[in-house]
Length: 256
Image (cartoon, rainbow, N blue to C red; front, side, top):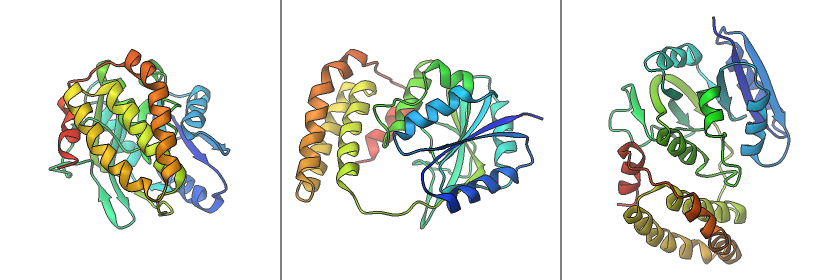
């Protein structure tokens, strides 16, 4: 039986994290539990935890998520389908709706171009090969960015509808920080990874979104664009265009 390293970043959510832990213990696998109970950059906390993890298979979860029975066993079976599978994730119920990543057939096992970060399993060697989450993101676009970097290096991501999870975040209206990160990270992602035509189209679309948010959060929008322009030479330097339709496809339709 595989040993699993379980990583859960949390901060002042004792009740929620206990529910997450119990759902993991009910899987019936021997686990190494790594809880990072700190306030800060979540991507950085997860990267630290992965460096400490002893085992090859990692389960990374939000503190406000739970996994249903057989999540781990189903994921491990999926990894056996192809040695180049890096990440397995699944069907997520998220309060009032279901997350299925723009899938036409969400009940089918299939390869995808991204994944949901609230509960997923990953091979440590794949994680290490791309050096984990990009800590400049912190929130928003961390998963699409990592997925793009993995796929560029020949790794695969698979969706297994039998890997079921529930995510119960505290639903909040947009904040100044959220608006800042969403704008900044959007531009970082599209210009580092996507073809020129899609990046240009998305940039124009996002300007409209930004202007709408700027009515309420003008400084967040201004500071986000300042950050983008300041970092743009570095982004272009790191630019490595991906053509895999699993990654580029959803971006062509998301703003129809």
